[in-house]
Amino acid sequence: MDDLIKRRVERLNALLKDGVNPFEEVRFERSTTSTSLLSQFEKLSPGEETNKSSKIAGRIMSIRVHGGVAFVDLSDYSGKIQLMFRKDTNKKTFDFLEKYLDEGDLIGVDGTILKTKRGQLSLLISEAKLLSKALRPLPSEWYGLKNVETRYRQRYLDLNMNTSVRKGFATVTRLVNGMRNYLVSEEFLEVNTPILQPIYGGAFAKPFKTHHNYLKQDMFLRIAPELYLKKLIVGGFERVFEVASCFRNESVDSTHNPEFIQIEAYQAYVNYEDMMVLIENMISSAVKEATGKMKLTYQGTEIDFTPPWKRVKIGDALKSAGIDVDKLSDKDLIKKAKDKGLSVHRVGDAIEELFGDMVQSTTIQPTFITHFPADISPLAKKFPDNPKLAQRFEVYIAGSEIGNAYSELNNPIEQFLRFKEDETFRKKSKDVEYMPMDRDYVRALEYGMPPTGGLGIGIGRLASIILDKPSIKEVILFPAVAGTEKIETVSEMFPKLADKFS
Image 1 (cartoon, rainbow, N blue to C red):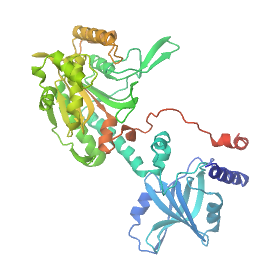
Image 2 (image 1 turned 30 degrees about the vertical axis):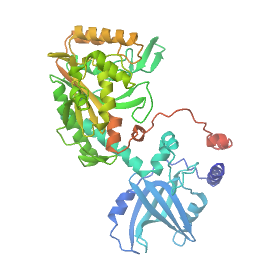
Image 3 (image 1 turned 45 degrees about the vertical axis):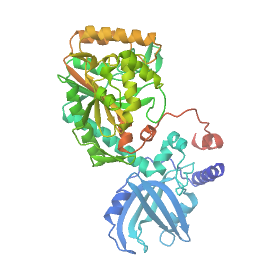
């Protein structure tokens, strides 16, 4: 590696000596892209040349020199095209290539399109301009970039070397935009709420803690935007949503990353059943917008996103697995969970953990699991005829929980008591994941909040299913990785370079 970098530094020095600064250009006016050229001239016959001039720019992925002809694969965002440098037609550009250019360099070129005798569309180059010199070599194009650790730490390399990865992230963006577009079409207003919060809330999670020097107080990175969004409902907005970066100080694995994105939406005068309809329509619409299809394959199984989706009570789901919640006491349910080695403290934990252990992995098609225990749903309304259950559901696809929703509790007195109960219980059980008392949220409810339905959808897990990637790290551009790298920059390896740019 050091020798390869040294060769590039030598070429950089040669450029500077010849009066060429490879980082000086501030723009290059392209007339087209590689994919547009290939599409426009695909019907040329082998050996046919045109006189149409085109300007494109991109990264050199490979250089092959055969005597007086050089073939260069140039990659831009749209795709890849072959460039042809011929010594007999333009010695200056050919010599420039041989003397100065390497794989990884970014160049702008002008040329005419032709099709080689072997049928390869190419751009015959008349002029080439170096736009940025790559001081480090790209991984071998033949072997690619396969090391997972390197791919996550140096995602910029991964995106350059693995076109499918770049296309996948473009699909994730279309998925998020599809959900956003659907909500906007339903007259939801997109808003932004604080990421730094004096009190964290909206979920059971351990937060990241920091300190604000000027305000002289501890702050937390939000674990969810929920409570602020519902304050907006109190304030008179009737439909709001946020595409929110959230942070939870939890494990890092195939389904968890400490920083993640979720879409949360709240609508006045509706309940949890209305949220089911909203979610299935929003996600199916976004999937169609992102992929062009309603049926996708995940790990060999076809997933059909076409509404309506299945609705199953969590008690019925457990009953199908041999556990009748209605016939077992709370003590027996907790014992059954503990016998399986599950960490539980109360009956709601037991029911949720038993579902996760026995049923969740079999919930493949999009399904709403409803009627969650009220004691683990402190922000949701209870059913009047069965106060042990909350008007809450979770969304499961391909065995993964991708969302949570409920009829929002709007009784400030009950909310205060539920906060108090949860805070006391969680602290007593020494469970770090509890929901602290938020008196300002309770005060907001005391001004009156209409009946409201709310939802939260995790983008990472949904995107993993859409792209058929079992690890969430494959759909996060820069996932969290353990440890730190020792990195020596080219400036440190060749300190004399600094004199030439200072």
